[in-house]
Image 1 (cartoon, rainbow, N blue to C red):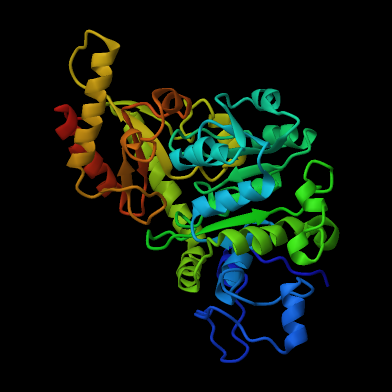
Image 2: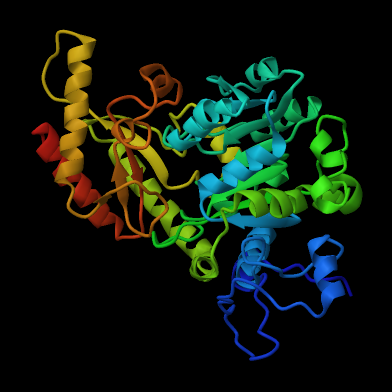
Length: 444
């Protein structure tokens, strides 16, 4: 009899969460402990030397956190995962494991503002250069690759511009160059898209967002496919002896688990952005209802996007599920259920303007008035909550970017990001309608 393969909804509830052997607890227990008992001196020595797997200290590994890691890895189709204290921490430990001073990363310019700053300021200060590619054409990424390039990086749905990445094209470019394709899939979740199935090697999530789903808890995770050849000569830190671990070699000693072992035993150990067990427990509760929530998010997003697109007070909508979006066909390929529920729109200012600058100033003021007039939607810096959320990125999440970077990131001054929640769609539309009337002075 062939082994049964459990479905996504079943794994969202059960993966990594078998009943506790000692107490019989059905929910994953919160192991609120900094450290764990060793059997004897030899056991302790073997654990510290990575000669066996086990729990040592919660900065490196914790049973509650491990359950979350296993569950998300199962949903993504990866061989394993390492959880972190936030999505930004997940990005940082990934980049710091892949690259060092003198190395180079190729990244899309259409990224969350904090990621742009991480790549353009923090990592550059450490000697790691990044080339930002403004085009979504994989050929432009190919042209940007150098001899010292260590990764190709993209968001599968850009935040907040709403572009959909050509994962298969980028995978071919990265693999031809002998580097991994690293994908931030936060806005997609593994329910809508599993990038590993389209050639990604490493998948990053801010678990804070849709995976957690309720806007209560920070967390991040790095999932690896387990198929990349880390011994191809471009990654000496994966193949050379590691002095702090008695000369072991990540690739030679751990094979397909080498990169994840390096992440946990080196980056997480030394940098320390660990996810605490209370947070892991809360995030596990969110993952359990991910499929049901995403179905509802997508249904509401479609209703709201189509309503906005048909409103004369709206100048543009960036949801790739609309047939006039430039990435509509790509979204149909990668997101048959729908391209998430985070997108952007611009409110059309009323009146006549004698210059583009005057119109831009008016559009920005209209957007600000719209946000201030909303009664149901929450104005805050998050996405993926059960509630509908709005934000003006140019003055918040992307405030630190230059005008040129804002343009490259697809963030015009009038752009309003919306994360469509789980309320009755009629109520979301009512709220947008009354706010648009207050902002433009016009009714639909």
